[in-house]
Length: 435
Image 1 (cartoon, rainbow, N blue to C red):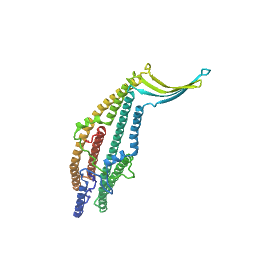
Image 2 (cartoon, one colour; image 1 turned 60 degrees about the vertical axis):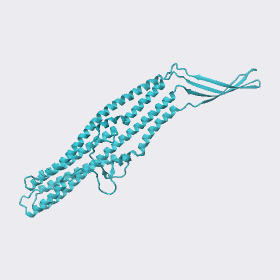
Image 3 (cartoon, rainbow, N blue to C red; image 1 turned 60 degrees about the horizontal axis):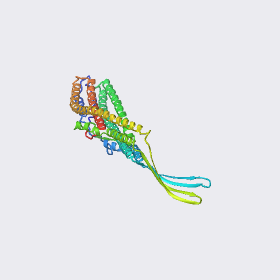
Image 4 (spheres, rainbow, N blue to C red; image 1 turned 120 degrees about the vertical axis):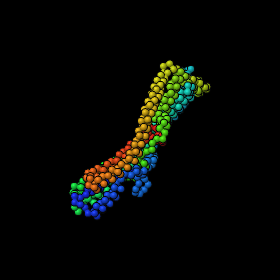
């Protein structure tokens, strides 16, 4: 990334300079002007020891954190436990009873029975299927959470990268101003420059350092967000690797077609299907539940004992409870889920169209501005330097030229970051790797 924009020209002295002084000054300005010219965008932020952190490494670190795994897998586990519960048969019941009469004809009778209820309607299977579908919806919601975290990681990563590039540009600017200030100070001591020119450079240096501190604070804030998501330790931000400007989406139409595969839409589909299963189970209210039993009985009377068996059967009569509440609840749930799905799809399609158009426009604008800034800022600096050397422009015009070059660099970074943010939002909404 272009990083050097500075204020270095020295206004000619009020008295004529010697030929040697003029030659040395012009040579110094030529070197500084070459360093101040905007350059092409940097693809990676390098420097220092160790490998640079990439955005994909940051995303993998965030998604691998135990807390996130516990949230997503725990929610699915809870939903699956409901599926298991709905699919279980009721336990058989074992009973014992004794009947005893008194008197000369008294007798004692014992009963030992075992009974089991049977679901002949298939409601148990339907409810189990509905619970499995809700478990699937829980898994889709887990994917939604992961997608949100991935988008947040990417946004924090590129915010930090942009801040680092801004700081690098301002740092180079500060270094050039410091070099120019040293030259002006020497020329002031020799009587070839005024105190005003020196003080003007000192003011520009103070402003540049303050701007650098502000941008560094932005980077610290972005790193704090990123490190909290990824679990990276360390007070200082690492080197980042990657291009701030994204590529334009190659197939915008494919982005729209991928919305239906969004985990949020899939979760609503699963919930609607689960509600349909519940409604079908409730509609079988007319099929009674049957309970069958069998056992042993023994009768003792007058010193004699007789053994035999017991058979029993019972069924429920659906006179009052015909699962009306379950039917209404399931129908309302299915209607709600399908309505939310259609509403989400309509909003997502509009948002994807908007973000796609924004991304395409911002990428093109960033590329054109970067190219124009490289040419325009270089010509502007050369014109300002030539005018200042020929005593046609003053120090303020020269400083304005250098400051304008730095502002061009910052504008280019702003455009590139805005394009990246639009691309991240597209990735979050569609899950497509195309953006």
